[in-house]
Length: 384
Image 1 (spheres, rainbow, N blue to C red):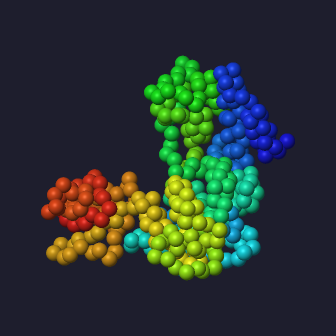
Image 2 (image 1 turned 45 degrees about the horizontal axis):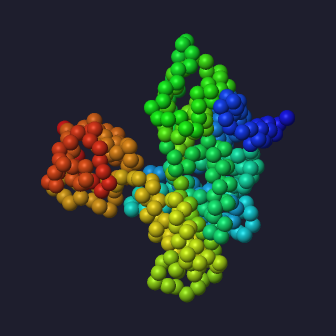
Image 3 (image 1 turned 120 degrees about the vertical axis):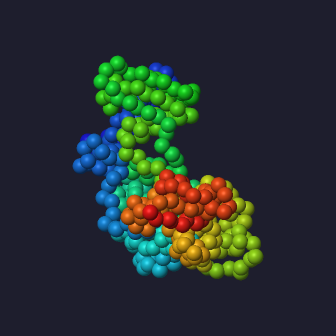
């Protein structure tokens, strides 16, 4: 029996097993077995690893962040990529025109962003079909491009495929800690009610992973068996995603109302239906051919990437607002700023003066290497 057949067999058994106290241990075992089989399927040579490392990309990382385009074939990914970056990505009505990853660079607010046009994925990609293994687990943001005429069905399928690669969209790691120990058995504590998982299911999952001695602390509200499996597997990636609702259609008269304009560009979509599309979390309807609403998409991308621009101020001169030093949120201290310019600067720093949101005073604040900078701060470096 192949791995795919084993997965199907377990999924069928789970579907027909009613969840109750008598079956929770068995369901826990099935979920753990399913996770291990999916790991084996995606990364057969990794031994204890998995969860979707796959083939990866033969593409050098450039820019401060990377954004991957994911979607079914022929939904306009390549058209949007080509117009955004000026990089040629083959455009065709034929499925699977893009068979390799095509990189490009886009500058937003002075920050170079790497854009990756990924091969179109199909249902079953996580089981090895299509070019699914090329999905970028290392991207900082994923654009999921959907056909605006059928967004919800395709959205569900793509999310399921990415889940199979160990990618968790618009989520954070669950507040669950599993600390293995040499003896003492299993001790389970929870600071929130266990509404979707019980102790029998927890013990079953641990048993399937041959964890016989561990302290399990659950602080995640509404924690599930899948959350616990993710923590034990330890190789999941948590990536924000934007849903681009796109359709290439003939041009219609332009209206001063941007939503009406978009509605006019998309055959069979009324303004009321477009309002419903806007209610899909993290979604941006656009027309890539007519280049409508792309500004909103770029602003949403910038907001989601959560980057920090820092401007330099040489002694006696005005700040240089033309070339910001762009840092990632969480790695935006004065030391990170210095290292982004040159690694020797931090060693030579006497102090820094900061103006902006992170400074206590409008006249500027003298700070050290550990000071955390905010977007559009201005920094002067004083050397020893």
